Image (cartoon, rainbow, N blue to C red):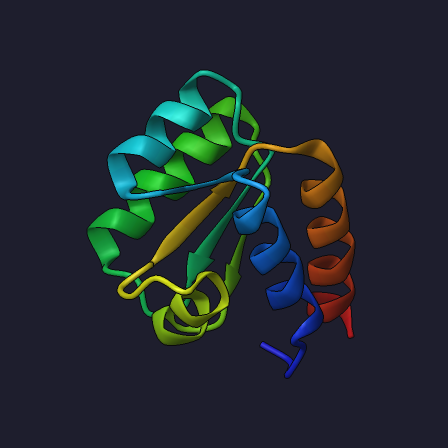
Length: 106
């Protein structure tokens, strides 16, 4: 992951706006109900959780990205031990997708 704090700022804003969901089960529910617009997964997530989330995202056609480690992700939202975040607002999701697409290609 390129050193890009811009997407972390967006996550922080989305969290303050109440548009983030945390926790494996809650995120799966968000994906299934099509409320999740994008899912961000920590690079150091456990294999089982990684598979569960990526399978759900692929099945329900929700874009997902692997981002920094859990500490960086947790810091962005001011909560510890976060390995995945679902964003339920289209504007934030679109901005994150743009930033992360650039990051991956760049």
